[in-house]
Image 1 (cartoon, rainbow, N blue to C red):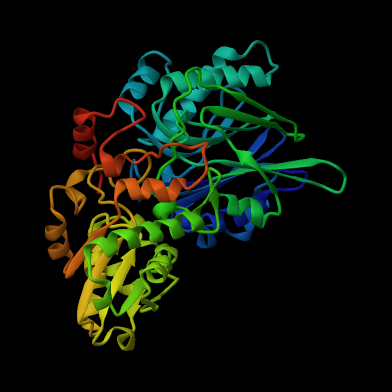
Image 2: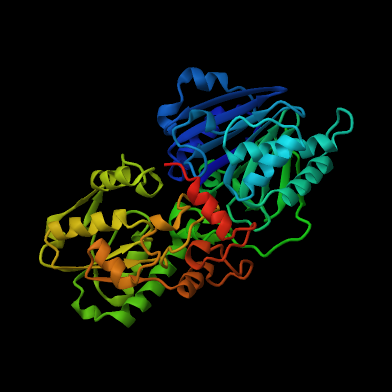
Length: 487
């Protein structure tokens, strides 16, 4: 999971990109980067850590130009600690291209071999973003006829890229002297939304970003999502060109985890309100809880802040149980799910959350969380509730059991680290210390997230079902990923 943004403006974009990355900080805390284009010249600053600490005044002054892009990263491939793997990435031919990417490629072994042996391109890191950039550059080079570059040539290059690249990818690239290119994988697994605003002089300004909240904050009008398989090219003077570049368009299948956990609740992702989806997840979860438990014995419903709050509110409302906020959150600690290493996650839970004793003491508490992945956070939370005096702790997950590796851009690539893999619900409850455990069903999750809209008929939900839609993801590939996982 990463956050990306690209802007074509009539004014310098450095501050706009910075402000956008602050809004996308929840999507990655390992590193960040900003690049701008000033005519034929690129300017780039990359650093480890979070946005607010990464950039200095001198950095912002060096980021000249009216076209730019930015990235916040958390590592799903390569190492979180290696600053050289921070995005954006750059190649100098053809023309000069800088690219940022959100997602994960699943045919990296094949692509790496092709790039070295056939395309004669050099790779300097293990990042699949560098792979994606070099595939784009190579295909674009084949399209170049003289110095001029047309939108049609760019779209032909993206079409060729779609045929070579497998996995999930939402990408934004700058082509020196020409403009901004954005494209999305044919399943639309990772999100990308397009917005526009018009200046008083009648000039169009454009933004593409991972989440709609970036557009709304910048007072852009949401035009639409970049369609699965589509490429959008915006010239430096604000002219928009677009084309469907996937020759065989698969069914739209955005990632279910965007709605469960990843995206901010105030975003609209793939035309679906994240907040509304989480409310509906609570509605459906309440049905499951009522089937399994005597709800009259539950005193209070409590959320794990913040992403579980809408679901917990609806669970309490539907079951007619008092809703209380028992955990206080320290907002200066990062999201534990995307922190590397179990020891760091475990320590961080206690730093991030504090249980208020007077809300727990002597009560049967139903705790609602957005999901249970490794179980580290869940166990710490149950222990905190008991230490605060809870008589009984029931744990409910607004998502189904995560039992399979996720290979499309979320850091859970091995089955052995997933608490639900190979365990019964009773065994999971015992492992996290809960008196009872209730999970959302896959059918219920789909019903809640998809709602009444009709454009999207399925979700990418491989971590729940083991069905991988994009690429040749089989047992051999999953074994390779597990054996090559970096700690």
